[in-house]
Image (cartoon, rainbow, N blue to C red):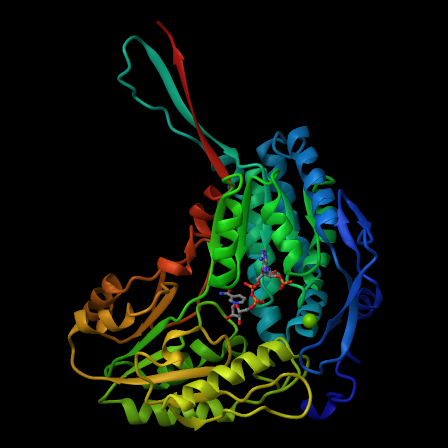
Length: 503
Ligand code: NAP
Ligand code: MG
């Protein structure tokens, strides 16, 4: 199949509609209209597999953010969206999911060109999951009920609670898996009746812009969804804006901390999905045929650019050599290449900056005494590809043990014995607490270890499996709040208590 792929012009075979979308000079989406950035500034959009420019985006600044917040405030206060009948709001949110399905090929092509991941993963998993998020949250508007409260205040009372939309929400998303990130953010906020200003990462603006068009086509009123493309300063302007009621952020822990500091200004609500250094445990009774690709993909999915990357791999000594050999072989067998090439199994890192960051962290790991089993080099001579890399001899105290690398680097360690408290101490020896996986067929051990690990999402004999209904988020410095499922929509509500004196 790959013989027919034209490496010289990788996007030769894409849909006409995708071509046309790329050819546009993209603008900001404010109050239902496409407008230039007030400064007139633009910046190129790059394909990380080639380093070549594929499109142009507007560079929004503090004035543009202000205009978008004003539009979102007007739409919220005007009430058209939040007072819509719950059935009607459901219907529109559902329709967005349907439109994503209709345009799945185009969305997947745009995402591959902007983000780099292999097409099949993008279309069959991420774009489908994004549509699922809208369908899942479409079911919530008429289920956001409160309670009646049996109060003990003197006299006779009727007391109840209601859930109301939190208001105008600023949503800031990263460059990894950006279309799904946009869906994670928009679907529950819209279902709850909020209005939104979304800021995608400067490295991956395209699918968020296309999604804004689909929202409009589905019937979302003007001003309810606004999209400001631009850099971190546009994100910071959103966080600082006094008329934003809540910030929902996904990205690095460092930026998350900066957001918390800035949000203190007006005590806006903040939810955070941050980084991780998620542990993976392999026990001797696990089915090694599944374990080897499973634990390798726990890190290598999206070239390691995933917040739940299982980047600390703990292997029991009884199977250590077999797992290391298997993972090394699997990792070096993966075909790296442009995501639109059907033969590609692994894409590039997002940018030159991220490539040098990962290379630097890898080198520090080697300097600190980790051993390189496979990988460690740039792949090819264009784009930002890094070979899948396996390090052994990793010890606590090394930076590759401690820090989120966000690249295709597996740090492996040997464990012995069965003391689950000791293993959990090891797992919990991190400032993060996002994910973990446990590979074993012993149900008792799986549950006992899961109970001891301080992390928001724990998989048994799997890693990275997510679903719109399955809550997701972090303990410790991996975040605040849970997205997806019921907690995911509650993040976008305020609880109001009403007491009526009947006496
Ligand atoms: P980042 O700074 O956390 O960026 C995430 C989002 O926040 C982007 O939209 C970014 O805009 C925006 N942003 C940047 N500075 C901001 C500020 N002061 N206030 C508000 N928003 C701001 O991540 P990065 O710099 O792209 O990547 C650095 C490292 O973060 C990665 O190597 C990785 O380790 C980690 N990371 C983790 C996740 C995750 O899901 N856990 C996701 C992304 C990155 P621009 O992109 O336009 O600057
Ligand atoms: Mg790009």
